[in-house]
Length: 258
Image (cartoon, rainbow, N blue to C red; front, side, top):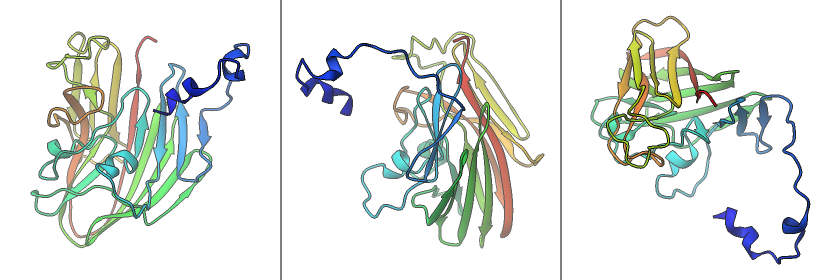
């Protein structure tokens, strides 16, 4: 709603009377945010995204972890909000890593214990549930971003890691501009999953050659996404035994033919 604030300005205010100038020619693709928790990236197509170290707020509003704690937020792909923690489909884990001990309840990043950042990266330490500790390093790349997780777990756990969500081709209400029903393609296998339509593509792929990371397409519950009534998320999933583990993947997404 902040976009409506200029409507309160007087007609003679410089906001309305100043001559229009061309957009600045920004140099570089990475823009650190002064709070030290975020880095902004952009592509030539105009797609902008933010890598996020999370938050440590004591206040917790509705869906606050979806609004403030996902790994990345996109100007094109939007984000999802969880409806329940009973399954990955209910959690709708785009731009997230979620874990479960019993496959009945799933946990993602809620609060960040501590964080660091640099010119093109952010790092955070967090605990999705008791007995599981994660340090996540997010690095901006030319095509998207890379994720590096160091996971210490006292339990055997299942995990699901998601890229950006795409409109599902069998649900086009409100999405005609993206035309997802035409030219929809998907591929998935050991260590990768990708989705494309005529306008967008979203890919997640393992960077360490871990063949036990299964690539799949997850169909979240309806109305979990801010932009689309139904979505599909490329994911990597697997299991981890008690101990220390390293997971690394790359998330690539953008517009097509823009």
